Image (cartoon, rainbow over all chains, first blue to last red; front, top):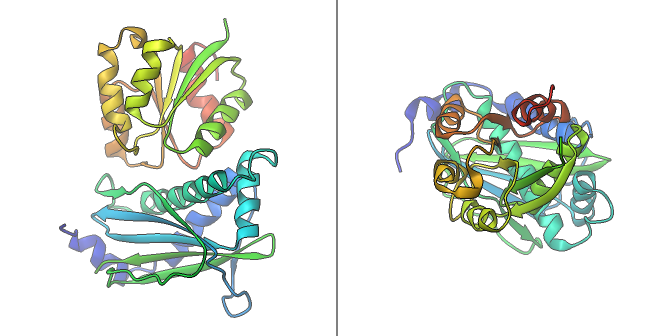
Length: 161
Length: 128
């Protein structure tokens, strides 16, 4: 798969951290009705009990992951669906996958030059934290921890160089 | 106007519910709401249930939203039915592709109820 060098190079030369944070904040505010702000990873231990992943391919290659604990995952689903239908595991996983998908889409839509040349995979969701994440993406790694109702959620973007 | 029979096509059941809720919040009086997880399922659903409005994602397995929209003119129950895309694919390229394929509107995720109102009401003959 060929990678557009201009975007891959820009990922190293430009600071995309604020872009990622804004993409996360907008998804939470618009789709979940909650404001979130970046928090210190040192003060809030992130959990990876629930992990959603969306791949990026084309002009920008890599993977975006969204991690939180089970309780937070259920609360996020309730925000999206309402309390009566958000308890089922498949609904919670579906909600997490959609949040991850919207963050990835919102992020790439904010990057000038990614226009139509970066595609997203359908989301994958892992439940349980007894796994090792290994990515062949060898470029920049962006990460932001946000507080959602005092619980940390972690959004990471691992890019191919 | 009679209640609007609606087909919502998205591989996420969560997003289908959110889209339906947003349509109601936008002031649409919905009749029967049919859901499909991809374009192929949507075509099968259309053969059974005629609808007045279609909301469709782009990135879906089996048959994506653009292919589905391009196929619609050959479907008896879908002729003249307006399609509005609701998708994370927000690039101008995708918008042009969708509108060229026959979509009447385009909403980027994440979306507000106001955006749904603005893009959907005109295509069903209501003022936004």
